[in-house]
Length: 265
Image 1: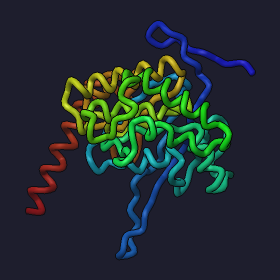
Image 2 (image 1 turned 90 degrees about the horizontal axis):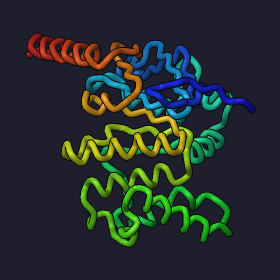
Image 3 (image 1 turned 120 degrees about the horizontal axis):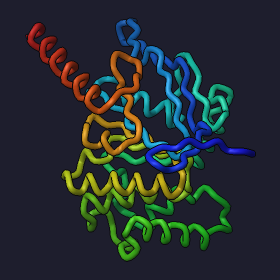
Image 4 (image 1 turned 30 degrees about the horizontal axis):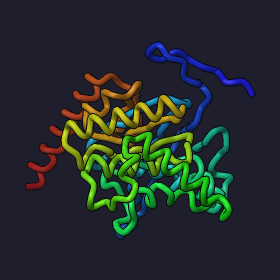
């Protein structure tokens, strides 16, 4: 199978699509029977090895979009193709298997199991493999912890680690199965600026080294600046933009939000 590649920032990146999102909408029915349209026709293509930031204000639908990209939820209409496969034709069990093998999630709140060591947390995604693969799982987890700079902290519980170290454990857990797609949901939101920058550097490095696509959901312009492409989620649709355009759009959204609050006060 041949792989196409494009030049981005002086390096070759595969142009084979990991994700192809076409005309996706997401609607929910409110208790009063009204329909709320969260996404109104989203289009997005993510190539292997690409790093994309999705910017948007709070309430713009970023979490809804992440759940769709991560194959957790299904769209009301439109299509989502993951490595060429249309998700609409897959059962819930097939989606779960595909998600477990090919998508790694990094969350703002880390979501580590408090009673488990760093090593045990990283092993968790590997437990769905063959029972005879114990030593292989153990080795992979140790190697991944070493890759994120925590090779000597595997026996520590989450409460014994700093916030930055916990996020690195969460990153190791997300990457231990070498997923094709990393979805990071506000990965620096619970961290100070310096630690947050280090985490974004780590995610970018792991994306480069493994060839995984990295989609970061954020409202932080500094985080968005680390991506190769920026897309803005506004009024239920995505549009590609520059960092300056994204800043102006976020400022406009903030002004509109403040005006609405004054009207209803």
